[in-house]
Length: 558
Ligand SMILES: Cc1ncc(C[n+]2csc(CCOP(=O)(O)OP(=O)(O)O)c2C)c(N)n1
Image (cartoon, rainbow, N blue to C red; front, top):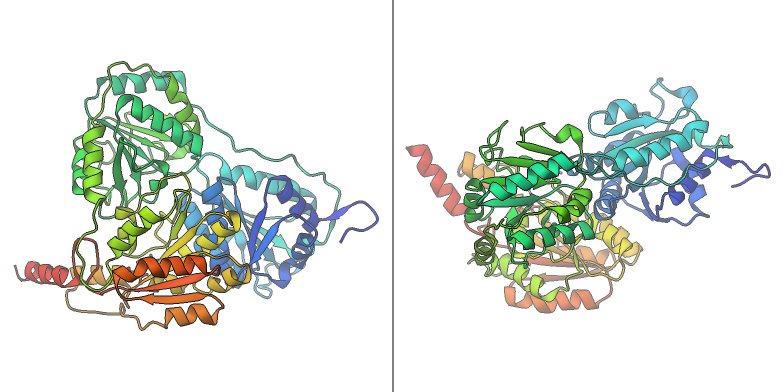
């Protein structure tokens, strides 16, 4: 509460500064360590979502950072709260997402006694956060929070973690608020763009790969215009499918797990690859086999907002230190009269690979479900998911038509879909939001279904229930055929779970029953769970457990 002296507590100054920086949503699990912040939230214009576990809260903040390009905000308490939040920090780091995690900390005079739940914020988060610090002096709070916004968003974005000693938060401060930050753009230089022009003009089979963060809808539109001018095939990197309309005639496909073999051939035979925004990490690079390291076999242009990423793994023929937004805007000036790529053939390959669902064992064909959803959902729908083999059907058969319509962890963390879907529904109450989850995946943060009910956030969760940690079982059958260990699951009755939490639940045993179930789930106006009975044999869109096992056994006999 404000006193008569016109000073604010450090906690009030902190919340004011969040508001000044455009923060409208924050996610938390409360703790006695930061009561002063919770109190300051009472009279300020921030929608605070109270969650059931810090992992969920941190993933919600990460999802907001991913979707908006501005730091997602999360508050947790010291030791157990902070460590519970760590998966969100790891995702933000690997996915280059701006976020700020505030950790209520023990009082300064008890520090380093291993006081109750004390955590060394700098030590614990030093290697996974972009910056981890603690505010020791209340008078420097606004300076440090301002820096956190710049650090989280500049260059290659990432997570910042800030410890807030409990006694510091109630000190009175006179420091004025620091003006709102704006992310800093890095523009490509004229010599680099001239060299890019020369490389494209000389190429017969150039292609673009889009990935990473620091994109906007106008940047995606500028890239689309550029690709269309020169018929350049455009590939999207793992979990970045929303950067390019898959029905645009230049779209060549998704480069992630289980990509179209024809797409891989096309990339391998390209005579110029231009990677914009992403890192070409382990999954899109097909376990670092697609391009030679350190020097790719074909002319390779890497455009990245983080100077330290250029030359880190791949030694590019041309490095362009620029944000995707600035790079895309600069493309209009390229003068390339003759250049033509092979977009038409690439797009035909993409459509052929994704048009029809593959045959699957069992009553529910998840590919057919995804095809139905892609036709039924409007382009502004947002899909969220975590990790598991079920996601292979999303990547292959769904079509993300708009920037920001897919929110999923490129870092492959399970448990992400429910928190992300809730965060998206809080941000965009008018847009349809669908969470896709595996049975294992869902229960990693399934408790946040209660948060969805509490806030009346009616998104639909579709659980592909195959009663196992399918991805790991698949690897198990490849490496140790027939020796099933720690991958079987006995699941709860998911529709009953939904109802017990105050939501809607239904189980679908046959593909043809899915459309009605989905329409009912959408119409009920509550958070909903549709459980799909997926046959355990249907392990990927193209193979079965039995086939993988038989092949591995045959190979081992040789
Ligand atoms: C937090 C986390 N823990 C463990 C893993 C390793 N992992 C990847 S996929 C997977 C199994 C996923 O099972 P499920 O959600 O049921 O989906 P399925 O693969 O069966 O479709 C596991 C355990 C992970 N990626 N993330």
